Image (cartoon, rainbow, N blue to C red; front, side):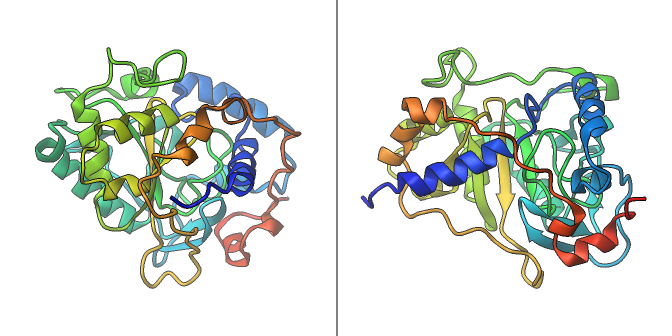
Length: 308
């Protein structure tokens, strides 16, 4: 096993954690998110990238292109995932975050079609994807900026169509035990594992982020064919959904992939770290300065209305 590079792991993970808005969780109800959004907007500078991209309500015209990195970028020519498909339903519709690169839209439609047979999962509940023009969000995420990220709820789709109001306010269900050490056996099922495995085996997947307790359960249940576990990466939160990330589409030259996951199944000492005191309670410094439009890739500025 390769030695665990704790300083590099810790620094990268802590930077991402500190970039998240305080108390902003991806599966907040619409009412909770709207209240938090107003509070954050009141304190943002006029040229803050999350203000400018967060106020755009429609995609840009022209060809689709993912621009920049997952945590500092934007999305041209976005497509919307339809609110209802034969095997999926979009949650939190009032947020207007069901946008993505066409590569992501096609991927989600194919994955939803596969899940009934591959996992015994009747369909997907799809959470946040990207904003109409990508970019940083006012609440909830540090990534999801270039249209290649999507949150999939760890709840099977019900056997009826939820109303818009239900989709905005229904609570997601955690599959992690209260102490955070493992999954909750009253909630976790073999279908959860098979759904995650099916997603991780799909071509084009860069990473799938889950709570460390979920990764621990997958390591225990995976069996001998473990190659797919490489793509399953532990991260704070993610108790109620998994975060799917695709690699940059071929031909999108301004899109920058992150480094590939380290080899191996990720079930050794690198996973143990997440259950240490350092992993559970990392020290938090002051929140980082909000990204300004000038901090974004140059071509992102053309996608938003400039600040007054």
